[in-house]
Length: 80
Image (cartoon, rainbow, N blue to C red):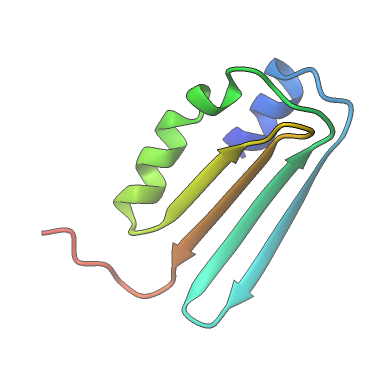
């Protein structure tokens, strides 16, 4: 949700799309904006920290459009 809000409110994009995929053992999330958004990747640092906390992986950026890709494991991760 933070990615979507940032793309619209802070990025000035006219369109954004989201995709949620369930794969064996993981959940994949994708947010695509219709143009590049400068400095938005830095604003997503708290989201990246939460994804890392749960053992996931996130990328954000792009030259011709802005994209956030996130994968979260569905199994329990022991953080001790």
